[in-house]
Image (cartoon, rainbow, N blue to C red; front, side, top):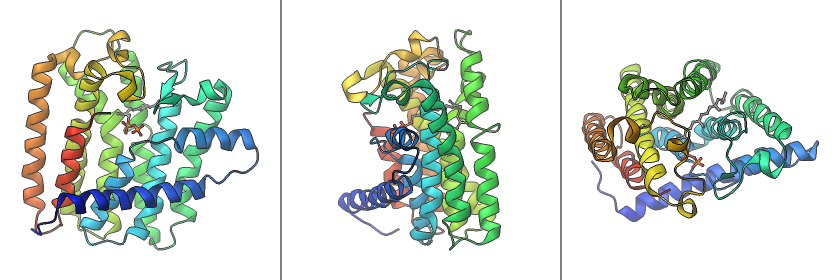
Amino acid sequence: MMIETRQTYQSRFETHLQAIESYLETCLAPQEPQVLWDAMRHGVLSGGKRIRPVLLLETCRASGGDLEKALPTACALELIHCFSLIHDDLPCIDNDDMRRGRLTVHKAFSEDMAVLAGDALYGLAFAQITDFAPQLSDRAKLRLLSALAWASSVKGLVNGQVDDIQFAHAAPDEQLLYRIHHGKTGALFRFSTWAGGLIAGQPEPILTRLSRYGDLLGLAFQIVDDLLDVQASADVLGKTPGKDQAQGKMTFPAVFGVAETERILKDRIAALHALLDELDGDLETEQLLYLVGFVEKRES
Ligand code: GRG
């Protein structure tokens, strides 16, 4: 294991962020019809944490891969994530006015434009891999496209969201809680860490472990999200706190209470440390460990 300083981790994280912001800005350069592109830009270029594309870039780098090769797929993933947030905020789903500290897309524009901006981002995401990733082999592109298609639809985001809607106000149920988050949050996290390894050319057994890293990290991320919804203020969160409880959502604090939720989080963090210990040697794991700390300690 190489020993690097905290400053190195932060500056590497920021380098990833700059590459992502600059790519997203270019791929969303305004076009006609202007209102559509303005709405798409509002939904994407609005200061998200970019944790999913950072994870993809970092698992690729930690695997010895080329960051330029991974960037289009990392940003495709962020476009899909932003699409899901735009649709999630719609009046017919979560009905939120604020996201990332500013008005949601349907509030800043209109409901029809928010639906269409989301739809456009979904297609634009896949086009980043097909048209703007010449360094990837056709086989790698097909595997990435297939995995992303499943993760962002019926084996991930959408089924997770359907469960989330259907089981709002249902009796607390541990199995259901994990099922919802395995889809809604876990699918894109699993994709990010698996795809980073795939692009770097890692063998299947390592890809399986990288997926597990994404899965555990996604779960930790969601647990922190649920705790923040109970504990943080609107200013810090950039969105309305306390909404989960108001909407009767199946969250970790709702099912387990806050103290037990904090214990489960510690348990998952310990499992992440153990997994990264196993991967050390095959991968440069220190920055992946730093990202575990980032997820655990985040305040918004
Ligand atoms: C077909 C893609 C698609 C979507 C339609 C609405 C929907 C189905 C799915 C919603 C999925 C969803 C909103 C999951 C929430 C996951 C989550 C923890 C979001 C917050 O992520 P952060 O904190 O947000 O990374 P930022 O703003 O930092 O990007």
